[in-house]
Length: 108
Image (cartoon, rainbow, N blue to C red; front, side):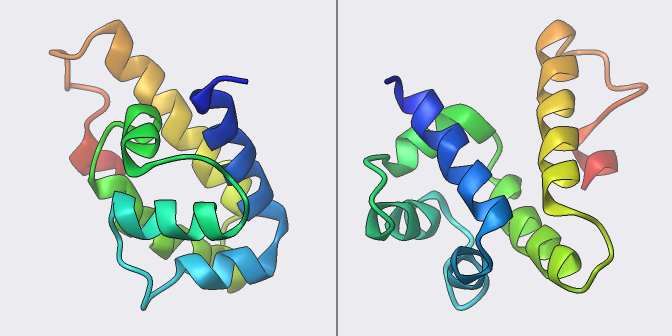
């Protein structure tokens, strides 16, 4: 199984596991190392670099912590937020220089 699939499976598990969500919230560092540490403690063989290859922007980690808090507060489902992030990355791949309709800053 590829590392990308491992990362996807980890985030799918995060969506369904409130204990794992709690581990990713502060005081867990909003960094690739912080998230990788939680993933490794949960039995996933993924590194910070594997996570970065999937999420691609350092802002993801802090925003993910915020999304977890919103999810647990009943505001916005975490799977929906992760799907929006994935769509953002797809749009960015299609045209990275066109930020008229979609920017990291606007997404965040």
